[in-house]
Each structure stands twice: as C-alpha cells, then as structure tokens.
Image 1 (cartoon, rainbow, N blue to C red):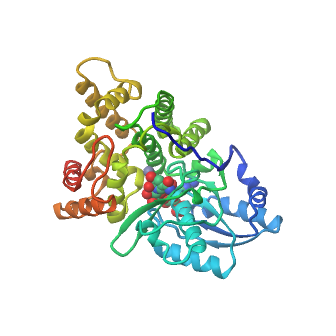
Image 2: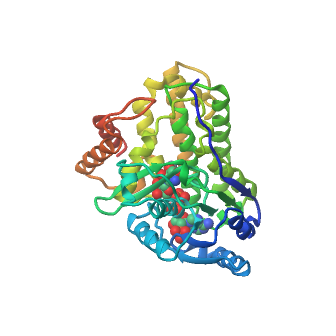
Image 3: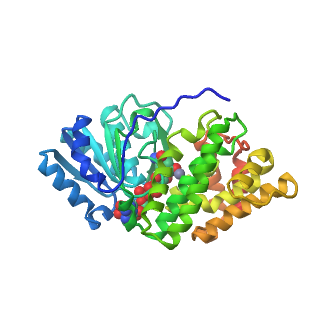
Length: 392
Ligand code: NZQ
Ligand code: ZN
C-alpha cells in the first residue's frame, strides 16, 4: 500500500431544493461580489438561473454574469472572465452548470489571483499559488469537478486540450440537487455515467499498490453507476437513480477511489482529450469509444486487475483462463456501453479521422504526457497510435 493524502474540503449540500441555500453558502464562505459563470444557456431555459438570481437579489448579494462556457471550454472565454473579474472586483465565482462551466470558472479563478498567462499552468510551465474561491450548483453528474482539484481547458489555437490540477481550485461548496439533472438529454446522462465510471476505472487499472478497502469502494461505485445508468436509460426521471449517480460522480473523482495505489493509469483520458480537442466530441462518449481498444492493448500487462474487474464488477462467469476471463470482462463493458447508447469505437462516435489525423493525435498526446505514461501499461507514442488505429 502506498502513502497517500486525502483532501476533500468541499462542503456538499445534497438533495431536493438545495439550490435555495445558495446565498447562505456564499455568505458562509465570504463572497461579497460574485461572478456567476455558466454554459450555453440550459440553466436559463430550465428556470434554475432565475431561482438563483432571485435569491441573491433578495439577500442583497452583488453579482455579475458570464455565460458561454462550451463543452470542452475555451481559453478565450477564460481570458474574458479574468478581465471581467478584475474590472468588477469579483471575490467569489459561482459556477452553475456542468464540468465545462466549473472548469472554466476554476481557470478564471487562477487567472485573477496569479499574474501572467493562465495557460502557463495548463502548459505545465509553472504552478498556481492561489485561486479565487468558488462554489458550484451542479446540473450534470459527470466530471466530479464539483469536488475535484482538476480543470480541463482547450486552447483554440492548435486545438490543444489540457488539464491542470491543484488543491487551490477545489470548490468551497457544491450544491447537488439530483432533480436539476432531469432536464438532461439522454445522451448527456449516458456520457456522464461513462465518465464517472472511467474516473474510478482509471484509478483501478494499476500496477502500483493495492488497498482492499479502496478496491471494494471502487467496485461498489462502479456497480452502482452501471445499474443506475441502465435504469436512467429507460426511466430518466427516476430520482433515486439520479441521486445514486450524482453522488457517485463526486466520489469517483475526489480521490477516494485511488487511496493507497499509485494514482492510476489515466491513459484513456489522455487519449480522449486529443479527440475532444480536435473533434469537439462529448467527453464521456469519447472515453467509451477509446476504452475497449485501450483495454485490449494493455490487459495482459495488468491481468490480475482485469480479471478482478471482470468478476467483481462485470460479474462474468469464473471459468476459463485468466486471459479469457479478462477479455470477457472487456466485452461485457462494451455491451454495457451499447446498452446505454454509447459508442465503442471512433466510427460510432462519428469521428472520420484519416491516418494522418491519428498520427497527429498520438504525437500531441505523447507531447502532452511528456513522452510516455500509464500504469496498467506504460504507453509511448507508437502505442498511442496503435490504440487510435485499433479504435477506428
Ligand atoms: O452549456 P449548457 O447549455 O449548460 O448545456 C450543457 C452541455 O451542452 C448540457 N447540460 C448540462 N446540464 C444540463 C444540460 N442540459 C440540460 N439540462 C441540464 N441539467 O450538457 C452539455 C454538457 O455539459 P458539460 O458541462 O460540457 O458536461 P460535463 O460535465 O461532462 O463536462 C465536460 C468537460 O469537463 C472536462 C471534459 O474534458 C469536458 O471538457 N473534464 C473535467 C474534469 C475535471 N474538472 O475534473 C475531469 C473529466 O475527466 C473531464 O476531462
Ligand atoms: Zn473524465
């Protein structure tokens, strides 16, 4: 078992009508002048934004608003938000929406509190020393950004999608009302479930360290999301299923399911970030499209974990060799993706990449990870290209 730090300072306020506590929470964490940051407008159409601003008006909390964070959020809007916050003396950011609005808010927070170009952090040139405090009202269960230390931003020039992690950006509070996710298109719900499971699977498929409790938590989380994703595919208004998935989303990426191991593999995410950057695909769908090819490429190097996953999570029959059981687990996972209408290769994802595109993505990915990366199996640029090719 490896040593670990577990730091989750976010106050979670979970359940029906919890968005009504937003003013109280902002005051608790000292916010005086707020930037409300959101995405393409779903929060306005659903009526959530009006409920939030009515409460802030009533409580005399000053705010300004900036919408427009797109899925795979852009650096350009981050720069705009930084200037706006500086001009208006904003001291607290409220992100209302999904991972894209939250990540964009985190990047704005870094930009306001650290000098220089905020992209430096995403380009691994230097580390942030601070971030504006932020709170979240979550509308999609997916990234776990509401409790995580990460944010992922796309630089329009060169379509470079990069993540940066630091504890400074962990939200002060996260309001999670599962009912708010009921307006989601089914596709986004399934993308979210895929992403949640992947955050734990990235930590689970490792060759470094072991902790039985962490594995039990991970397997329980994966089975819970798998079952509830299937329920939501048929019954999207099921509150309890929404709630199970929403809480799993936070626990899948706040560090809990990685305690005691080496931090995990993360190559499926790195490969997907290239797809998201270049083709602007939904993150969860991109993960589903690449995972099977990645798994088949690496499973022999991480056989005990793939076998355990097959038996304990996918619940395949314990018969045959370890390799056969591992492969049955991978197939069962792909069947699950099909059942919730997620793609299992790039064609199904709608990506028409030429071989040149694949070469470019593998190269950018290798540069992005500093040459090679992975724990289930360490992958270099040639391996990355082989996985992209297999996923076509
Ligand atoms: O933009 P709006 O109009 O709000 O619409 C969004 C968007 O089109 C819509 N939506 C969200 N809540 C809704 C809703 N529509 C109806 N009703 C609701 N209640 O859903 C679409 C997707 O939203 P987005 O915020 O992009 O989704 P998600 O939470 O999946 O975030 C994806 C981004 O997060 C990054 C991804 O790479 C991607 O850029 N990630 C962030 C991580 C982190 N910070 O820890 C980790 C992840 O691995 C991931 O990389
Ligand atoms: Zn993810």
